[in-house]
Length: 166
Length: 345
Image (cartoon, rainbow over all chains, first blue to last red; front, side, top):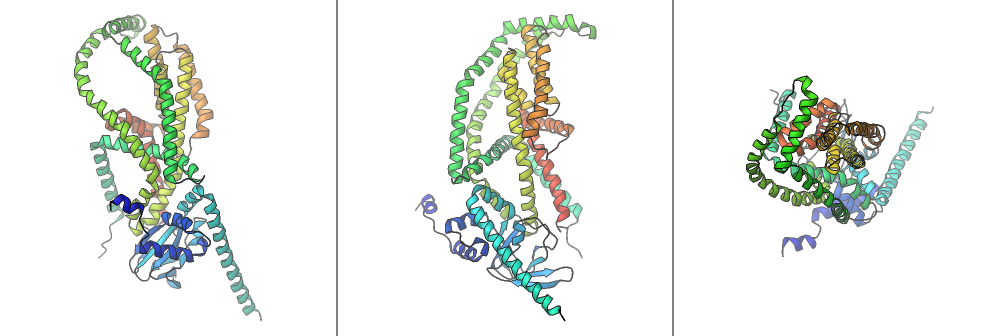
């Protein structure tokens, strides 16, 4: 079969399938159909990191969100080098950077050789320009995710307050 | 021992890379011109493609529609303007036939001697110089026949490359970003995004400004009944990209043609005010609306760029030097700003 026909009847590779399955688990892509997910996949940047390689530093301008395809990532608070969290396959980090360019609040380091997908803020805004319907869906889900985190934080604060009361 | 390269080594490496790039660009001048023109056209048309995509079309369909509309528009303009173009070019050729040109230059010699003798100019011997030039004209024609071939390849290649840059530009950009090391990944993404937002508006604005100023100049010169109004108007529009010198060059071309045509400076009294008014309209109305102020360039900087562009890439290089200077200015400015914000040292 010629390359042309191979391209026309091309099936998704195993890796593309894995990425699609991962994306379905990400809350901000909740409710999107496979065509919409494919549109987002086209704007994702895939990056491979070696062990101990820094993904971003605390204080760098936040530019986008990372999704872990494989490997483990440490979130480290500086300058004390305290590990705040360890993230694994399917987890995501830096989703707030999709909304503004505020500095990263911690450093992210690859604990093991890792593959990550990056959704860059300006690529997302470009997608919103091209497909406002899909853009609204993502933004609503992003608002819900951030809202849920805010609720959780409030619960923690209330728990701490209750613990502090004599 | 610290094996990390110092900042100076990095700067030297960047300067060396840029120098090699410039050298290659000047060696492959033709290819560079084609790529730059195609890239600019694709960049200018990108918002149109995005607009069509937002109506539910795929990028390929959007690109096809834009090219179909452009083809119709260009064919229509050619049908309308081609006769006038051909007339004006034939008129120039007729005016420059050996006999008429000799008479014309003899008249100009006389005019110069009569009006400018007070500053020491007596006889320019234009007729003799013209005859000498005519002898060399045959050689010139043969050496430039090859240019007709290159013009044809440009006319085919530029739309072809523009089409694919417009259709697949986003995927190409992604492939370029893919080869950037992780350490510079976010920095590069940020740099591209900042440059895109500043340059996009600037380049599209400059293009629109040249188009509107050119149309105004054509209308004004047609109204004033200046010969070759179409060609001079187009030249004035393109020259307007160059601050200060551009509008003067446009007016000068129109005045020169009218002086040669009529043998007097009488029309200059109408042409110069017309250009002054057009420039005022441009500064007060057109530029504030269409040209982004984010890329302010010093006129001297633009002028230097125009001279360098002309030296390496001819007339097209002179025109492209304005957007190219904007591009380099934004690239350098944003790189310096971002270097300070990222921990790259």
